Length: 355
Ligand SMILES: [Zn+2]
Ligand SMILES: [Zn+2]
Figure (cartoon, protein in one colour):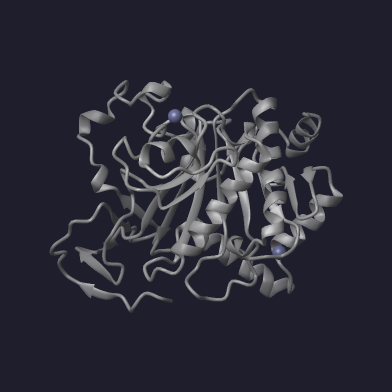
């Protein structure tokens, strides 16, 4: 643990953070109240939501710096044109850039302390919130060239390796929202990365289950799933290093997962020669969904071992792709039981045929 021991404090003087983390007294789950993004209650009224699809002329990601964003934290340039010094020309030639989120959910703060408010525990939402933007306004990952998808994965790894060294950072989540129903607020394709001081409940649950399985069976639960899936009929695509399948226990209809075929807890340890295979697997999965379901909204995210210095050798990193094929209703919200209305075997059969 890179964070010093938490000290209990009765007050929260000087609290000026972009957000605060609040822990549920019973479930111990953390939520974040993004005070820095605060809206007036009226803004939540139906019909008041912001417009999603921006024309190029109104898109803040065509020229992120001119739209008031900071200098890029990482920038890749297009092969075809030479980099020329002078801001305007550089901006025209970038192919990918990473910037700090203008409306961050996590930002500077003190990660070393938790506070008390009545019976509750809270802490600063300290961390990082970055946006990874690809150049083309329309082409999302499913439609990009393999080279461009490789570039995105390289950027994920590069930023991950940089942020994991920070003392407040114990978990890094990389995710991508596509389409209005996915929760994306801008239509220009972009991924996001948050680097945070806590282990989110979903991650904790996943780690706990993987560890228990490892202790009981002396092998990785994910490796056991992969071995079985290969023999069954749920594999959609595979190459030398990665596999895409429709999980036996999906959370939503058409959920897909991308796994490294060899056991590996940490995404950030992906080798340079493996990146193009991951790009191929991810792009193939998204392309098939895009074509098969006529451009559905979806979210994908990485699940990887925390970077808090502890041993997670029993874990197996992967990507989960969740198309917005259904809306959570009372049953899902009330019980946590998620309903899929198609068998994953049918999903795999359908998507395998899509070229
Ligand atoms: Zn744009
Ligand atoms: Zn494994």
